[in-house]
Structure formats: structure tokens, C-alpha cells
Image 1 (cartoon, rainbow, N blue to C red):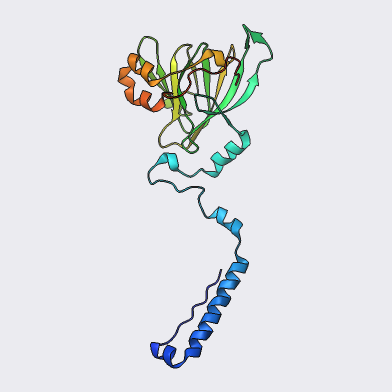
Image 2: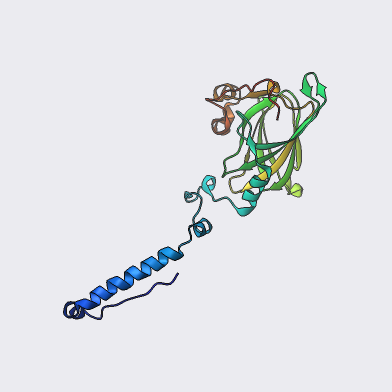
Length: 235
């Protein structure tokens, strides 16, 4: 878009030659009208962010084209209570004790949009698989009172896991590392997932048994939310 610059040489000119001011006003009006005619609103979407980020806040970082493409591709849903973005990819047509013989999902952790797994435990083992992106962390609270942290990612020679089994009845929560953008992973279960095998972890209950993990529990508990899913809910 081009802009014209019109200058009055001196104050004396503006006093002695009032027709100059009149011509300037006409010229400016013409430029503004021309700009309005060539204005393209759709061009703004390539310039303006979708929201205003807070400085140094990873939770407010802008979504990258790669992350947006992944979200558009999978059209994620959100797991009730747990809060994770996920997509169901397999539910076995065969049943075992009123549960599907197996289930599989693809999950996404990210800061924007916000997606974590709040504390919960399952009645069956759950196998985690890391696929793509930045490392994620699993926070595990065992029945004997111990805490275990698992980092999943592709750097297997430095201790990251591309596959990990969370045992049944272990409280688990998960999140992306602070400097990461996203983590794409999968979870499989056999017998498969149903709402009846899920229990969310409240702050009050977890702090009684794991007081040393106060910071993590305060951040990732389901305090103030329901802890039970409908029994027939299947991912």
C-alpha cells in the first residue's frame, strides 16, 4: 500500500495561500478512499496472532503450523475428567468381562492448546508409546508411597523411553516439558479402557499419601471435578 506525503513549506504559506490547505484536504481524502478500496481483510490473518501471548509464558505461545496441522488432521476430542486431547483409533469388537478386549488412542500434550493428563489410576496396565515431538513426563505415585518420574521421547541413549508400561492401580499424571511445543503419543490397553476402570485423583486424597509431591499434586490433581466416568464410556 503506497502513502503520499504532502508538505506545506511554511506557516506563512498556509496563511497567505489558503487554497493550499484546501488542496491538501482533497488529496488526503483521495488517498484514504483509495486505501479503503484496496484493503483486503483476509490478509490480516497472516499478520495478526490468534491471541496475544504473555511474555515468557509457554502456555501462551503461538501455535506453530506443524502443531496446527496435527490438530486439524486428528480432530482431537477431550477425555472427560482427565482433560487430555486424544483420538480413539481402535476398540476391539470382542469383549472380556464386559470390556473390549483391547483399545488404542493417540494423545497430544501441548501448552497451547492446553492439554495434560491429571492424576488418575486404572484397573489394568496401560502401555505408553512415544511417536513425535518434544519429551513428555509421566508422574507416577505407587501404592507403597514412592514416586517415579518417567521421561518419554526419542533420545533413548540418554534415558528417554519410547515405550513404557504404567502398572494397574498406580496413580499417573502426564505433561509436556516446559520448553516443549507438543508431544504426540499413544496408549494401548488389554483389556481395553472403559469408564468403570478409571478413577480420578483428588488433591485431598493424594496429599494424604504423597505429601512430598505437593507441588505436582497441586498442579495436576482433579480437585473440584468429578472423579468417576460413566461405566460404559469407552475411548
